[in-house]
Length: 289
Image 1 (tube, rainbow, N blue to C red):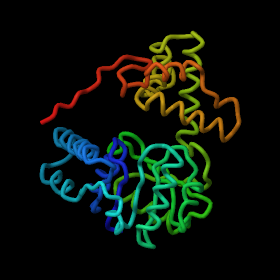
Image 2 (cartoon, rainbow, N blue to C red):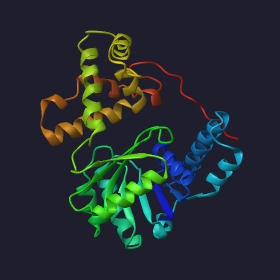
Image 3 (cartoon, rainbow, N blue to C red):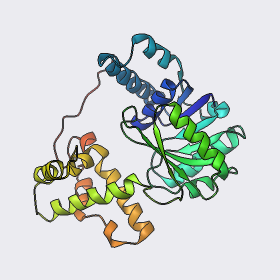
Image 4 (cartoon, rainbow, N blue to C red):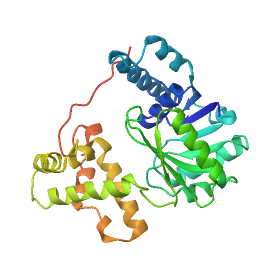
């Protein structure tokens, strides 16, 4: 495996492109619009600049990493990639369309991976003629920092595909856990999202303030971040979408979202990215230059 294509130049896609390049792979970062691709590359440059400031990277290493990243907007350019990692919007119809196109574009040996956090790998793979070479590779935000990658098998994902993905994960300095059966939320989100949702119920019932809920979990349970702080960082709209996906799949009332969450989303309270969620934030503004 020499060349990796990453589809989607947002925070997750840019992070995946960065760690793949740091692992020595040639990387193609692709998105629909040139300005989005530029922003993705800027995210990588900023991440590397911070690493230099912390003495974790030299300027020569930064230059070598950046030299291994190419960008494009034409999906056809991923045709010679050995591994394609899709990190676009969390929408099944969009992902299936992309994987159907990749199936026609990419070489027969190429592995096709999705960074989905909750959608069915088996259903995504059904859009291709190579379901044995399709799997989930769930990275965590921020990608350059978080060590875990969940490798998720669909019904037809082969053992060779999982092993190749595991070797790639090791090469880029991450640790893999294998999800042996395609199930919503896999391990981390299956546990984490209900935890956050229960904290939202406590807030919505007026039992305690956001600050008190977060302080309780940090001081009483040793959590590095409170559940509502974490919800704001992830994005309340994303939390809501995942909770609904769990509820739809399992039909278990323990996964139902509190109406406070949907009300906040309707009002534009999406967390850090919108400047307000359970807390208020200042939104960083990037100057043109």
